[in-house]
Amino acid sequence: MSTAVDGPHAFAVVVNDGAGRGLAARAWPRLEAAMRARGLKYEVIRTRSADEACARVRALPPDVAVLVAGGDGTVHGVLPAFVGTGRALGIVPLGSGNDFAGLLGLRSGDVDAALDRVTRAARAVDLLEARTPLGTHHLLNGLGMGFDAQVSALMKRAPARLSGFGRYFWAVLAGLRDLRTGQVRVHVDGREVYVGPSCLVAVMNGVRYGGGFRISPTSDVQDGQLNVVLGRALTRVTLLALLTKVLRGTHLHDARVVHGHGREVQVTWAQPMHAHVDGELAGEVTALHARILPGALQLLSLPH
Image (tube, rainbow, N blue to C red; front, side):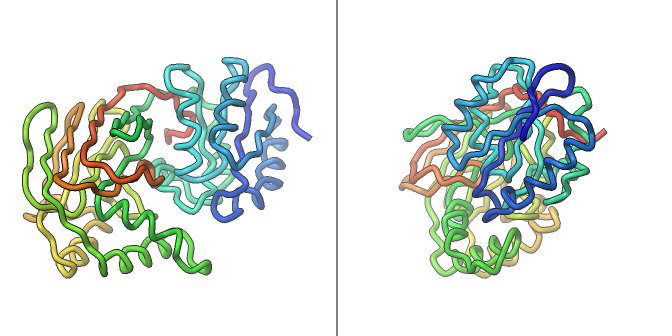
């Protein structure tokens, strides 16, 4: 039974029962016990629907902070309820993809470490806003077009015994068999930074994706900048070799990689390419415009 959310350190906890193939649901009793042990006041919002979670968050009193128990997808799903509100967000990483939490130094399933941070003062971090012909999205971590999105789609077909990085790597190997390259033009702050063949373009606020691939190692979620990373013309062999560098975050000096940073980016493809936002598929598009929203989210989960 949850307690009323009033007074200091009052929270609502969004539990995505489907996150991490049920990890969040299984971990809820442990999370609830840890919150009670700390004397935290809370109510629980249990749902599998992002729209329902957003509606219930919007209905909360404005001073109630929200803890999201799930992964990158769950956080992404509730972000619309936070944009422009000043409501504080905390993350308890209990999903199959916890890359933004990893950036913060939080490990999947470590409930105690996550709760140790949520009674500190919230601090402002940046968000991404991405617009495509199919809609507008707000993101905390990042987006990918081309191979990245193809991998996100394939992860849904990965063997059930795999989790986290294992699922992503399985999808990478499957995606290499059907590698697609298209002509792309990329502008950052109105300046053309690349035109030519590419199989992937990533626009990042965070550092990593795929359970540990450090695609944008120089990103800083408090610098008011987005980061763009793309691969030039790559074969299956050269892409696989490059991904080993991405794991270590040492790829930015590779001649096959183009990267830059700024406040906005325009990506235009000659043919439709798959896109994902925070790991969630966003359809096939030929154009995308993204901009940084400096300090648009109050986050409780930053390290010291």
